[in-house]
Amino acid sequence: QGALEILLCGIEMATMQLKTHRFFTAISPLLFCIVVNGSSLPWGKLNLIVVTDVHTWVSGQQRQIDGIQKTADYGDLLSFSSHLKNISTLKMADIFLLNNGDIVDGTGIGYPNGESVTPIIQKIPFDLVNCGNHELYENATLRNLLTPNSGLVSHFSENYLTSNTVLTSTGKHLGNKYRILPGRDGLNYVAFGFLYNMKDSSKQVKVQTVQHTVNQTWFREALKMGNAAIILAHMDFKDPLIDVILSRVRQLQGNEYPVVFLTGHTHIRGSSILDRYAISIEFGHYLDTIGFVGINFTSPPTFNFSNIVPSRENLVNITNISSDRFDTEEGIEIKRIISITRKAMSLDEVIGCNPRTLSPNDPFTWNLYLNTVVPVMLHVKDRDNYFSMVSPGAFRYNLFQGVVTRDDVISFSPFHEKFYVASGVMGSILLGIIRNDTFLASSSHSMNISNIKPEKQYNFYFPGFYKDRIEAGLLQFSSTVELSAVETPLNTTSVWEKYIQESWPRSCEEGLSNHGTTHENTLSFGAIVSNHEKLFVIIAVCVGVHIPYFLIYE
Image (cartoon, rainbow, N blue to C red; front, side, top):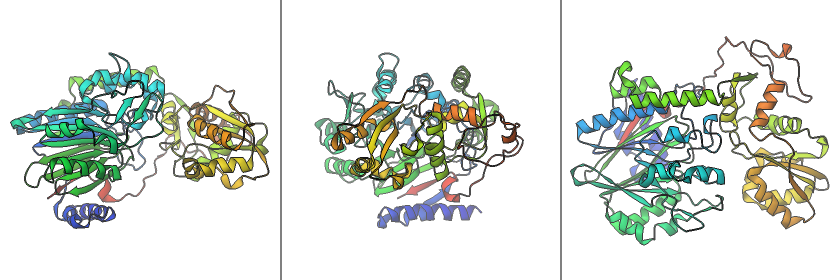
C-alpha cells in the first residue's frame, strides 16, 4: 500500500508539471516523492509553516465535503507551530509561521468585516502576513485592517507585507514593502508580499501592477539583503505573474538565487517547479491544509514540502507529543476565545433542518436561490417581469443536509450584500449590459440569461457586488432606467436564514409533514432524514491529493 501511495503521489505531481509545460522536470517528482506517515516532516535548513485563504475558518471545519477530518482550529495551529519551533531549535534550523492573506469573508466569526476574528488572528505570532484581495473590497474591512493600535497592520507591524498595495491618498504602502528575516549561521531571508493585479478594490487603495513593482529601486535593493527570497504571492501557483517576478529576480540576482513562492487565491493545492532554484506551492483554503516547506541550500537547493491534513490527531502524531501534552497555554487561550466569541454571536444556534445538501457546484442551488429564495423573500409581486443574478462566487461552501446552524448559513453565503433593483429595463438593454461586460458575461451560469426576451421590460434584481458595473452599463445604454436599493432589511446572507426559518422544519425530528408554513413555489426537497441518521456523503477522491506527502526536487 505504501508503494502504491508513493507511485500515485509521484504520478499526480508529474502530471501537474506536464500541464504547466515544464517538461524538463516532469520526471523529478516521480523519482523523489515520499509519503509522510504521521510523525515525519521534510525538515530543512529553512522551514516554513503556511496557511492561506483561511477566510475566518479559525474554528476548523466541523463538516467536511470530502469526508476527511479537518477539525483543527487556530488554537491547535498555535500549539502545533510552537512545538515545531521547539523542534527546529534542537535541529539548529530556521522556521517561520506565515499567513498568505484572505483572512475575511467566510464564516460567522468573521462578521462584520473581520472585526470579531481580528483578536483571534492577533493571538497567532505570524512571522509574515500577506494581504489578500478580500481585505481590500470594502471600506469597513479596510478600516478594521488599518485602525491604529488595534488593526492587523498595526499589530503585525513590519511583518505585514503589502509589496504592491498602497493608499490612494498618500501613495504609501499599507504595510511593509519587504521584510528581512534573520536566520542562523549568518543567513538572511528577504520576504515580499504580492497581490495579483487587482482592479476592483476599494477606491481607498491602489494595487500597483506586479510589473511596475518589480522594477522599483527598493525591490532591487531588498533582494541584495537576502541569501534567498520568500515570496508570498496571493495568486494562483501557476499565474503568469509568478514568471514576471522570477524573471526580474533572475535578472537582478542571477540563476542560482533560491526563491520559494507561497501562493494562494484559487483555493487549491498545487505546485510547480519553476527552475532548479525556484518553486511555487499553493496550500489549499479554509484551513483544510497546513503547509510545511523545508529547504536545504545545497547546489542546487532541495525544496521539500508537505500538505498536512489539519486534524488534531494528525498534528499530535506529527509532533510526536502525547495528546494530553499537545495543547500549549497560548493554544488553550485561543480555543477559549473562539468558544466565547461563537457563543456571543449565537453561531451554533439551530435555525432549521435542510432536506438536501446545497452545493455551489449544483445547478439546483442556483435555481433555488434565483427563482425561489430571492423573489419570495423580497416579496416580488410581478414575477412575469422578474429577472435576477448573483455573483458566481456567492456560495462558498456546502449547506449540508440535516441540522442547520446560523454559522452554516454564513459559511455557505457569507457576503451580507444589499439588494438592488433596476426597474423597467428592456431585455435588449439587459442583454447589452451583460454581454458588454466581460465579468458579467462570464457569470452567465448564475443567471438565466437564455430566458431574456429583447422586447420585454424587466425588473432586474442584483447584489451590491454588481452595483457599479450595472450602473455603468445602464448609463451606456439608457439614461431613463431607475436603479435603487430594495426596501428590505435582508441581505444576501440573511435572506437565506429568513427563508430557512420560514420554509424548512425547525428541527429534523419534525419532518416536512409537520411543518406549518411553506411558501408558494417553494421547491420540493423530498423527505427529511432523521437527526440520528448519518448526514454526510462520502465523495470519492484521488488518493494522492489528500494523503499528506512531500516531494524532494533536485
